[in-house]
Length: 160
Image (cartoon, rainbow, N blue to C red; front, side, top):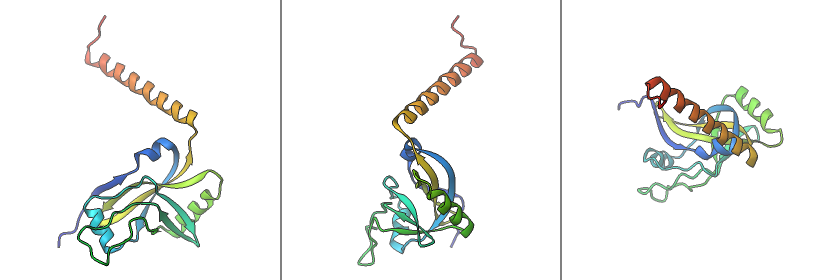
């Protein structure tokens, strides 16, 4: 059997980057059942309501929806079960220390296959207030306008 190489994106949580300010990002392995892997290979998953927590010295992923495999039988999984994440002990200690602070949470950003193994990116994040979101959007808009003007001037399309 040919081994898969590279990175194949399954699901992405774009709203997390809008709602949270991201501090650190960790790549974690994820413990899955067979039907979950088959469902992920079909490209079906949702990270929208997901979050991670440190419980009893282990990292657990909650609220991520991986739908049941259509060809599965009685061995199918429950779609929103909690799943164990695999990280190094040192990283787990760092994550646990950071999440003890108030307002800090662990948010899943991406779910993907890397060299045939399911991986998930989990970010240590702090929730943004409404005014923070507006200021971020204004900054993005300003940089977009500056870049547009620079590219227009470099291409020689001045309208003087």
